[in-house]
Length: 257
Image 1 (cartoon, helix red, strand yellow):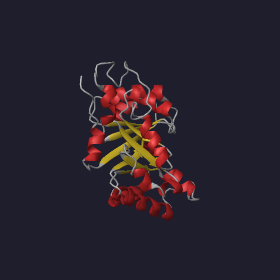
Image 2 (spheres, helix red, strand yellow; image 1 turned 90 degrees about the horizontal axis):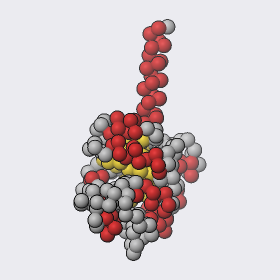
Image 3 (cartoon, helix red, strand yellow; image 1 turned 135 degrees about the vertical axis):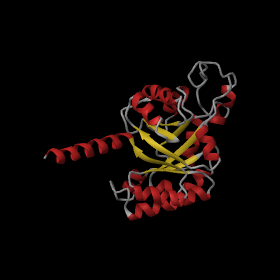
Image 4 (cartoon, one colour; image 1 turned 180 degrees about the horizontal axis):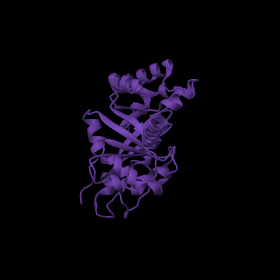
C-alpha cells in the first residue's frame, strides 16, 4: 500500500485557500456530520477540550471517508503527545504556543523519524495502515504537515525566523492568547490586536508560508482573508450549536409569549 496522500498539505503548497471548522465536541457523530458540510479541513482540538489522543482516533476515522482533511492540535509542543497523534493516523498537526525558531524546530523534529528527528519508531499503527505501508518509516515526513501557532507578541516578533525553519508548512495566528499577551484579554477584535494580526498575516505570506487564523468575528475573518490568509477556520462546533439552539429558543419564546 502506498503512503496516504495529505490533500490539505498539497492544497497549501498549491496556494489554494482552505476553509475550516473547529471541532471540540468529543463525539464521532458530530465530527462526521461536520465532515459532510463542505469544509476543507476540520481542526480536532485537544488543547482546549476534554479530548486526549485516544478520543481523537474515532473522530479521524469518522471523517476519513469524506472529502475533508483532519488537522489535530495537541495540548502542547510535546513530542510524546505528537507521537501518539501521528501513530493514530494524524497527518496534519497544529502545534500551539510556538514562540521562536528553536521551538518550531523541536515541533518539526517530533514529527520526523531519526536521523531527521526524534519520533519513536512503531510499525503496526493506524499511520502505517497497520503495517501495510512498507516504506512508511522513510517517507512519512513527505505527507506530514506541520503548522505552528504564534499567539503572543513575542512570537509575532519571531515570524521570519520561525518561517525559515525547514519542515514548517504554515503559521497560524491564535488571536485569543495574542490579545491577552498584548494586554487585551477577551478582546480578540481590539483594533490593536486586529492590526497586529493583519501585519502578521502579511509577513507570513511574504516569508513564503501560508497563514492561518480562527475567529468568531466575521469582520476579522474578512480582514484576514483580504490580507492573504490561506487556511481560515470560520467557526467552532460548540459555538454553532449554542448559537443556533439559543436563537431557536428565543424565537419560540417570542411566539408563545
